[in-house]
Length: 561
Image 1 (tube, rainbow, N blue to C red):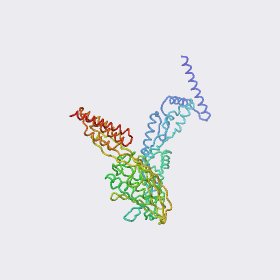
Image 2 (spheres, helix red, strand yellow; image 1 turned 180 degrees about the horizontal axis):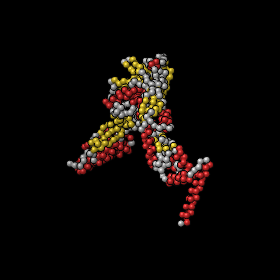
Image 3 (tube, helix red, strand yellow; image 1 turned 30 degrees about the vertical axis):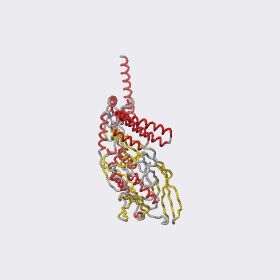
Image 4 (cartoon, one colour; image 1 turned 90 degrees about the horizontal axis):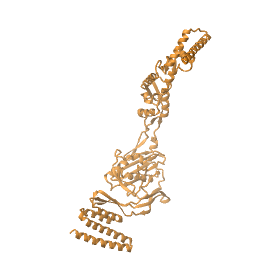
């Protein structure tokens, strides 16, 4: 009870003190103040302090949030921002004057500082009674206009510029050449335009976040970068001479490989390359997909031949490589195949592989444009490179392949295929001889050799012949015999053992006979290997094994009669 009396006394004294101060300041200013006015102001201050609502005459941006709770004010301001997001914004191409109308929401317009609501709620409620009284008085007199901060999203701006401003963008089209009969036609170039995305974002951000109040009359000029086309008629008129040409044959290729070669040739044909410009064969002819015109055909992979989309495409890059060599263009990237190919000599090939990044790249190191003409006729592919010939007509360039080492494949690789019937035996990949080679560039002037240099080194791995053997339906004893034959590495022995699988009995009572037959094949294989080794002891042991196997076979045959 005593505490309550003390508290009431303090409140009374505080109130009296505040009234006194208010009266003092009012009198000092020369205006008499009624006690009723001061009492009312203090009462209002106390009421607002206890309230969770925003005082009257408070605005966030242009939104009047007077008398609202924080939640209500937040909703009102957000509704206004949502309305702004739907307002129209017109982008203007500075170069052409073209206009594109979008909305502010397309650029990710949002309310940057929702915490401003909490500040609005606290207005007139901070400090002691006197300061609160003065704050409320000022609010009643002139109100409070708090800033509404807006922001835009960089990613949404970039996405909108790319997706919706396509009409502002166009790639440059270079002057080009078109082969018509035995002459060239020049195709006109066209300037290209690109939006300067950095400047565009700055312009959009400034327009929509610096005191923007909406409306449908907002226009934002965008900077557009102009890209001039490469080339001109004067430079292209120089292209008249054959700099180099080369042809390879694919007469033994199947239909799918033929189609792949023709498709790759088509994708390169007609390329115009300007001085100093680099050409990537891989970029020009990939991806190797059905949608891009390719079919499944044989290609090299880790020393084996596999089916892949675009199989045979390396003959395209190889033919182009040799045409570039004859034209003496600058070679930037060239790799040989993993195994030797049969359509050019060693070191004259150029492999392409999308998975490993193998590419054939070259640079037009002449001072005039060059034009690549590609054609396929009668299962032959030809590339001819045209340009402006400035080399001495008495100068002759040729290339010589030199084999440094030949590496013969040893043995045969056997693949046991459970999907093929017992007795099936077929060579599914021929053997490939390995080579180490290099390519010489030879230059003659007036018939006399003036230079000779090595321009590349190549290494081709040997690959064993692959023999696929069927094992479906074979009994365990026969399979063991086949494995013994495979261990010899001799193709004839393996083929014989594979053939024996077909005639080998499958019933339990015939198993001894099958085992005896397998033992004979194994003994014969052992004998053959011993003879090849030239070791007398091995030969004697093999002969003994043959005799023992023959006796066992005779006994087994007698037991089945």
